[in-house]
Amino acid sequence: MHKKFKRDIKSLESIFKFIDDFIERHALDHSLTFVLELVVEELFTNMVKYNSNNPNDIAIELNKKENDLIVVLTDFDAEPFDITKRPDIDVDQLLEERKVGGLGIHLVKQMMDKIDYEYKNRTSKIILTKHLEK
Image (cartoon, rainbow, N blue to C red):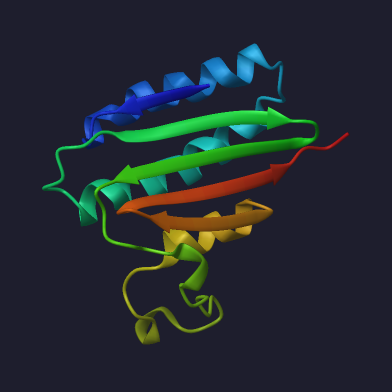
């Protein structure tokens, strides 16, 4: 399934419906709904926030290939932002000592099994893979 969404936080409701429809269509365990919604919300929100003047929609693609669930978020006419290069957060560090930001990406990295990033011709693509239990 593939769909473009308006670059607006208000699009999250439609995105969650898109995810729910995918889960239903592929008869996947409903526990995946929380994981998918959280990671997509985090990344979509970052794309909106850090590229707010961009008039282009953001594409979201959901695929099931054998025992993998693949999520692709594509931001058009964007500056590169490779989340795979973001430093890990020290979750054991005291809150007062931590820098603000990065926790959402940390959660994405923890919840997904593989994250890839592609950037070409000002198109930024984040590819997330979740291995499904057999």
